Amino acid sequence: MTTAEKLYKTAQELPESVVAEILDFAEFLQNKTVKKNTANREVLIDIAGGLETSTTFSGDPLEIQKRLRDEWE
Image (cartoon, rainbow, N blue to C red; front, side, top):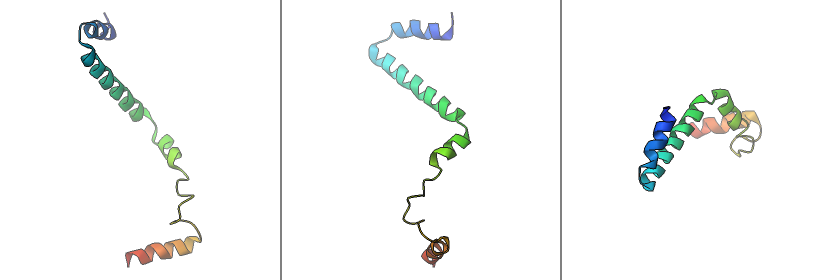
């Protein structure tokens, strides 16, 4: 008997509320595994270009640098 079959058999004998908790936990583990397996490159692609519409970083690059330096003084 596989682990999945044992889990199914055990879940059949539990109250519905407990089975719902098991499902919630299983989905949590599934999402955690998917996120762990996602390459860092894909995550960077998702946020690439995120500052294109930023008012802080719009305009002349030298002026942006000056504003940012002045902010620290």
